[in-house]
Length: 89
Image (cartoon, rainbow, N blue to C red; front, side):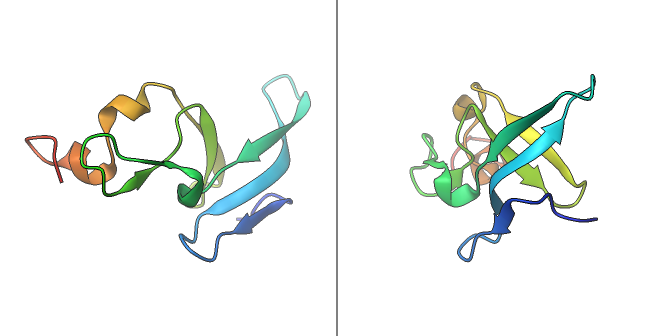
């Protein structure tokens, strides 16, 4: 699967970032900014790990799609905190 034109791989976290043109369901084209994990925020629960910035977009390399990160993901914590029973890393 080809990475959208305009996105480049971050040398630190290996996720993609940049701006690319996408088409919506109505075939209308628009420019979308994509952020990598380095552009994210520090987890509010553990204060150690980074997580994707709320109200941003990220590129899912496995599925080849751009995903929106909703505002409420900030409450969920990082992947480590979400996977533990007590909500801490």
